[in-house]
Image (cartoon, rainbow, N blue to C red; front, top):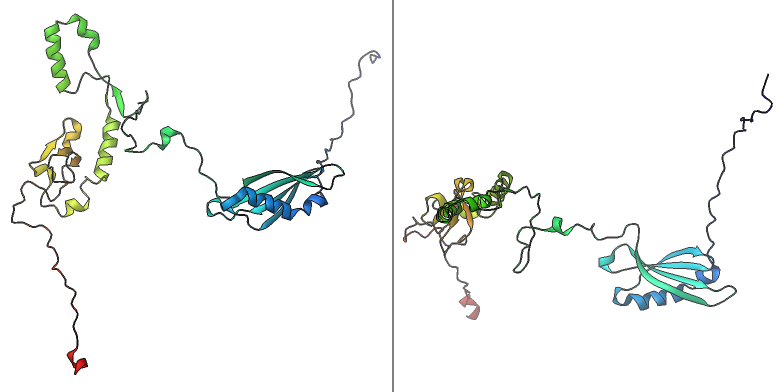
Length: 276
């Protein structure tokens, strides 16, 4: 037998509730006619930027409306002057609430913000500026300083060992990693002191055969060195071994390099028969 005291669980399926979209405010006719007043307010705010053609109006609420004008300034292509105006209930006077410059759908906008660490480029460090090194910089790897063994060593022996370690490039908390060397080598090869520039094409010899060339130590020394010729534009700079310039040490004094063109003089000839 059915339990007469049992709670009834059957429910009718509820019909979906349709929500009406909020009604859009209607433009106030009094404010809609105040185009000249809105233009005057925009011109006062714009100054040298100027105010262009009228682009229409957008109702914001009851007795609130925004007039739009084009901004003709070349640096603000697609931007619009928005003049928001309002009117009191049963009032006939229209007031200006605010005048702002807003972007349109096709406005020319500033690029997306990029963090300072990602905007940094080569050569951006200036005198007095400090560039912190991140802990996870792939260009560096932990070095061997030997500081933890200094207390167990004889002071004289430790001083001598430290001098040798300094010559070998040790004694630093961080040293250049393989990735850091590869990145530096790629920059130097593609730079102005690489093997493919115009100086090298006209050079009488390569840097590796020049007496002013001082090779770097370590792995980078297989391809690079420093120029010590004070008359060369690469003096004090890293150069690739197959790079070259006109300041090669083997250039004899009698060699001129590229022949200079003969000078051309501007002369004027006069037909003497015109004066006969």
